Length: 113
Length: 113
Image (tube, rainbow over all chains, first blue to last red):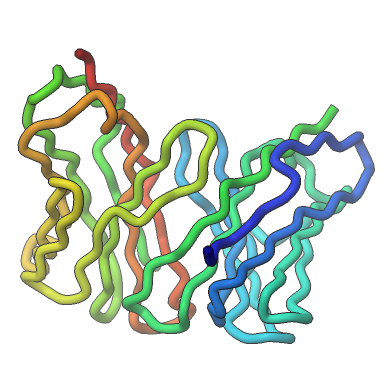
């Protein structure tokens, strides 16, 4: 079955450490996205990519970085510059175009210890 | 910029009650509108969508009608079940600019037996 896989499900980061969250899809979708969800809040867009080797900043890109070297993969690195990284991170993919909804992964919960 | 406003929760209902979750939006152009559902600890799932004015999206007994005159996309269900307990997100995709989804803050629904 096609789908989108995020790993790990839980991740713990020490202060000053960079961590990378994995997102892989086998849906042949062109576009991929990273959102951050804080308790009781909506989703905020971090980065998105509509084509391989190209990506754009979302609303809260500071302290994060991404790459899109393959169509199937869109990893997110949370750097030490991100001051408050504890959150639930969601990856999604879609066909390009306004009318297509997203397929979401099951999320990664990142906690700073 | 684009924005989505949802009624605050939690919304608490008894089983078989009628559900309405209000959603209004602000957007340039002619957006597509979506409802997503999130169960605890999981990613979001597309519930329904509407891509033009007066369209009605429906799925699993849920319905929402795209009202351009009132810029609204309210979610309704005639008879809720305990299994409908979740967080519901309204979202839009604009036909200009970045075409990434903009989400509302979510509404938690609790259905009691």
